[in-house]
Length: 205
Image 1: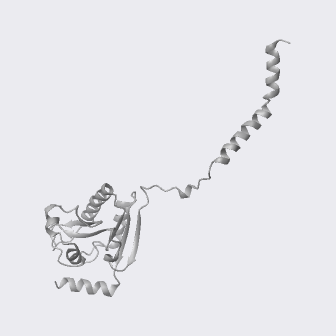
Image 2 (image 1 turned 90 degrees about the vertical axis):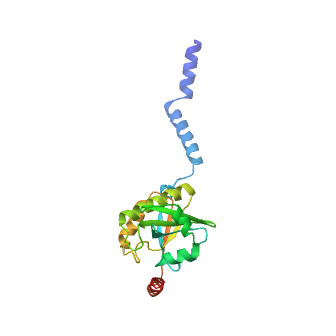
Image 3 (image 1 turned 120 degrees about the horizontal axis):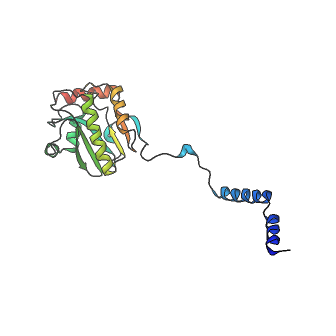
């Protein structure tokens, strides 16, 4: 028998369709057994893990490496509300003024291990902010956070004390601005009686 015919007969015996299918199946099973199962629900993007948390308590009791934020006017008066406490705790009024930030922007102080953000939402302390100026100042703050690796911010219910904005709308703006980031925001609220007392005391200063 010619050599070529003998080789063809041998190959047909060695690699019949059934045997070939069995070999492929065995190879696939071997490979799949080495792969770890993946739970799709556990895959989360680092750029899409924003969370909005709520805490009842003193804002300044938050961790000392956590950024802080609140709203002020362009003139940096900080003469009422929680702004008075920020001024007393972090000083820096001249440092803030030197940054020459306008409504819709954000001034920043660096204090120890944290950044302190001053959202400029209006021109003068006697005025009221708009939702648009608040949104723009939050976007400016977000840009600084991303550049500096800030992932945690604590704040009061910004714009909703003496400035009289609606928290329902403000919280929605926060979610819209930060929803595709890895930044977590914790909103601190005092118990109602304590909040009223603090506001009244600060208004008398």
